[in-house]
Image (tube, rainbow over all chains, first blue to last red; front, top):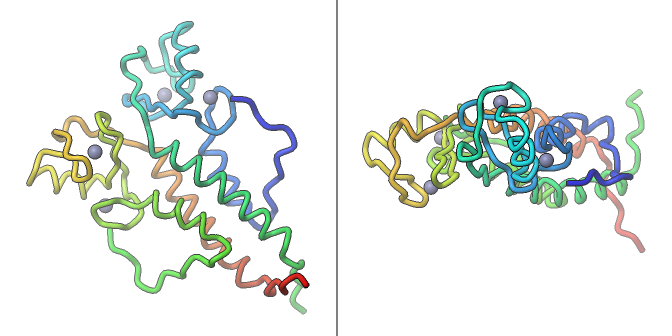
Length: 107
Length: 107
Ligand SMILES: [Zn+2]
Ligand SMILES: [Zn+2]
Ligand SMILES: [Zn+2]
Ligand SMILES: [Zn+2]
């Protein structure tokens, strides 16, 4: 995947959703998972294409270095569903935040 | 797990995050995943305790009926991380929504 430049930043008061956003990104390409694959022996996840390219070069998990070969990889479909829906929700949320008048500090 | 009564509802304008919330819940107990386990052959996920109890009674996936035995189950740790952080984010978000003055309809 390619990281979209000019993605809106997470507002300060929604910083915890930024952590969720980070969890839904691949540690190889840093974009949202695209056909997420889990390595069952260590529970790490990557895009299908990213991890297959990596394994053709080195047969280990890029994060924890456990030995991995391509047949070990299994689809982690819930991550694809989460990416799709979280991405839509993010757009809805940013619109809501931009539409909200700023909160005046309590006195 | 036990479903907390009196959980705040998702506001209309954040309905898409409700879909994310639903994805992070176990199809057996309907609470957030508690030690999420993936069935690699079908990619369905359940709480560790929920699916182990189920398998002791019937050796199949409760959703798609594929044959499963306990050694097939693998940790899906990213779901535990997502549950933890999404739950905190939800509380931050509800606070933000409650603090925001209502948006006046554009005229
Ligand atoms: Zn990737
Ligand atoms: Zn690993
Ligand atoms: Zn459960
Ligand atoms: Zn299944």
